[in-house]
Image (cartoon, rainbow, N blue to C red):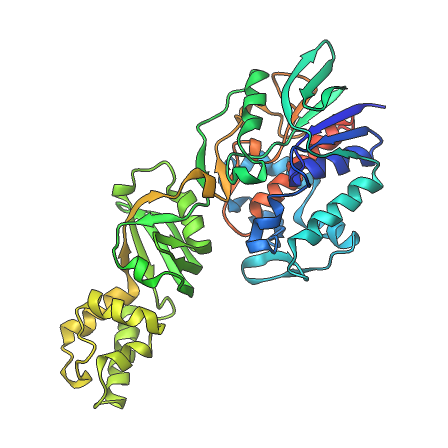
Length: 411
């Protein structure tokens, strides 16, 4: 019986333990925190967006970097496979807007408990508060040392997470372990991170969520990002699903060259929107600009939009000039935003960068440098957009790593 050590009790590590245990390995998972899945508890605003229901032929489009590397991993554990397993462990799932998959209970803790049940059923053991300090290969064995002493394994899976949200244990320590085995780690940067903007009016809208809007970005003539969805204004700029996905599209680029536009009325083109304005004005000839804008926007946005469009709120609609209407339409359809920076890495949902994927076998997640060493999850230089893609990558790579570490070679 092969003895498999797994460092990290997040989604990749737990799935690796499940997979290795199911094929008969003796499994010990080492987790530095006082509980498993600590970062899982905060995903999806505490609801755990466990995967996405997108069809297989579209799934890889959800990755900003190195998505093709995941092809074999997804073939071995698809999103449908994952959903069946979780529901089989007693957690019903539901599919929401954009294919996002959540537990029906809206409780991330239910997902963690389901994974723990599957680990126990496979015979995996877990040691909590077990911080790994070093690991090395000695002959054909791996020696892992920490405050728990030294453990000896036939195969070792590193699933230590990235460098975002260090309070959850995802503090970048796994990258040091990977480097100690000779792996190259690419530059570590935030991905899926809120954006700090230069606009002074954004803080005035703090807490306002916009739904069914389109956020886009281009550099010169090249469109870098364009997506319909939901976003949030904050005291520093913008956040929410659209802003987070945008951050991945423009990470590493010169932000001064990026043109960001917000379309508040994506269902209407400029001409149709102008006709609607004129119709609303004709129906309320004695009304004022404030009432006109309140029919188009959330109330807190009205004074901001009036200032941006150069439209006095107390102006009678009968006195609104054509150029003012056109300026308003332009603001509603292409409101400019200017990215100044990203929030700190510690606030990123996932990490961009990690172990070079060219150094890892995509079929098994085995290191090409150190036989018997496996890498999974956010330690790899792979990151996806919002919507469950990053968790699916963690589960699928963890599955392949665990099966392979246990000696079961996938086709």
